[in-house]
Each structure stands twice: as C-alpha cells, then as structure tokens.
Image 1 (cartoon, helix red, strand yellow):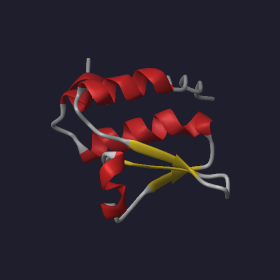
Image 2 (cartoon, rainbow, N blue to C red; image 1 turned 45 degrees about the vertical axis):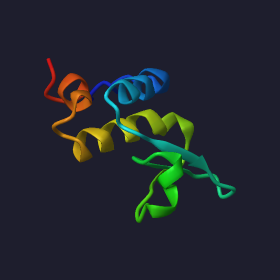
Image 3 (tube, rainbow, N blue to C red; image 1 turned 90 degrees about the horizontal axis):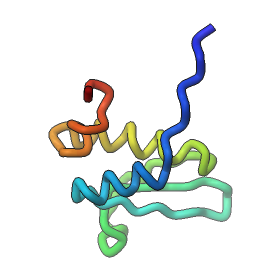
Length: 85
C-alpha cells in the first residue's frame, strides 16, 4: 500500500504563487464548493472556466496542480513542479 503524501500548505502555496506573479482568485459558494481561477479579482467576470474543489483540505493541492499545468514556464512551476529538484 502506497503511503499518502502530505497535503500542501495553503499559505505557502499562495505565497509562492504571489512571488511568481501568478494571480489567483478563490471564492466560496453556498453549495459547499470552493472555486478558483488564475486571474485578479478585478478580472473575475472575464473567466470562462473556474476550477472547483469540495473542501479547503483539497484546495492547496488543486491550486498547485493547476498552476504547474497552466504555467509550466513560470518561476512557480520551475521551483515547485513535480520535476523540480
């Protein structure tokens, strides 16, 4: 049985995105979901697709995985991506 990897720290993940100049907007909805998109909150009306998770526990991992995928050439992906040393 494979050991469960530790959850990412949300504070560290958001700080690293900020330092890499990647905007992220996170919203909570009445239906229990958390949505996020890689835009400034001032541009949130222009977003066609929001990513969604069911809990705060899932949020840091989901934001990290999508950031690495959507910004593979960014400082964030280079420092924190799966292939980073």
